[in-house]
Length: 235
Image (cartoon, rainbow, N blue to C red):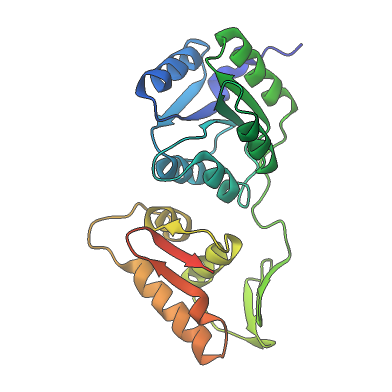
């Protein structure tokens, strides 16, 4: 059996757990086994970290503030295939079922045995595959709007719609996660490749221009919605 503990210095793990004591316990356990570990206490920060860092494994609690574990996993699975172990309450059968249905790779029940957790982590790492590109599909479609992923072209009623590279990335990200509210912080990282800063309205400006261009071309610009205090969504 391959000893992943010996390779742990090259393996990066994200822990998303809102209980500070349990979070610290898991981080300490993984650190003792020489894994590189980052952690956070809420689902929105967890999604942001998962989307902007190259992790080999994510340990994900279900009941989280700001964004629950299932919602986080649903969004994450549209952009990457990082292995995820759901951490659930003991005997929470429905949570286990929902976790697997949303793309979880395994689960552990609280309170868990430390040895079992480490064995499950090693088992997941043994069988996990390298992360895949988020652009698995050739194109994304909604009504008369078509985004060609490979050529990075946008068509409305078969006619080209001219977007800047930033506008294309913003529209692609929102359509890829259709129906999900994506926070400004998440979009700043995915679209602008930088952290959000106070009074910076760059994403607002780009979204407004994309909406205007879609509407002028009789496209579904009205489906680009602002969720005040939360972010944006393509409904």
